[in-house]
Image 1 (tube, rainbow, N blue to C red):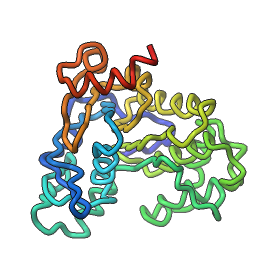
Image 2 (image 1 turned 90 degrees about the vertical axis):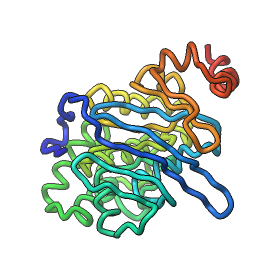
Image 3 (image 1 turned 90 degrees about the horizontal axis):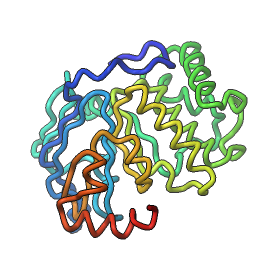
Image 4 (image 1 turned 180 degrees about the horizontal axis):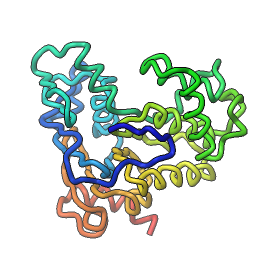
Length: 266
C-alpha cells in the first residue's frame, strides 16, 4: 500500500488479509523459541501480543521483519511471494518481505551521530532511493505531526526518552510500510513518559494503520487492539477480542498470567 501523503492515514480496512504466518519455528542453539506460530493480520487491524518474558513475542516480530530467519514455516504478504522457510530463501525474497514492514524497537535504536532529521531520512534515502529533498519534506511533516518540529536538528542525546521513541515511530512511518511492528515501545521509558508514546500509537491505530504490537501495557491493549494473542512457550495459547481475553479467558495459562499482571491494575 502506498502512502503518498506522509500525514494521510491508510485506506479504510477492506477486511483482506495483509499477512499470513503458518507454522513459524525458530531456535537459538538448543532453545526452541517458536514452536509453530500461526496468525493472520488483516488490513487496518491492530494485533497485540501479550505473554510472559521468553514466550517468543519479540522473535515473532523479528521474524516478520526479516531480522531473524525462521527455521521453518511459511510467511506471505498480500501481493508478494510465499516464503517457505523449510527451503532456502533468497536474499531478494527476504528483502522484499522486510520492505513491507517497519519496526519500532524497545531502545529507540537511533544513530547517535545523526540529527533527528538525518535519522528519519536515512531509510527512505539510502534503502528506498527517495530523493533527499522529498524525504526531508516528508520527515518534517511527520515530525510536526508528533510535536517534534523544533527538535529537527537535535541529536538523540539531547532528547528525552519519550521524544527519542517518537522519533523512532516517525522513522518507521517515513518508510511508508504496509505493517508497523512495535516491540515493547514503552518498556525503556520512565513512567511519566509512557503516555506520550502510547498516545501517538493510539492515534495511528485510529487512523487505520495495520500494526502488530508487543506490549505489557494491557490498558493500551484493551483500548486499541482488534485482536489479542496470548503467547506462552513459543505458541499462541489463546486469541480473541480484548473484551473476551481480559474478562473471560478460556485457557488456564491465560488466566494465571492475567491474574499476575492485570488484576493489580484494576
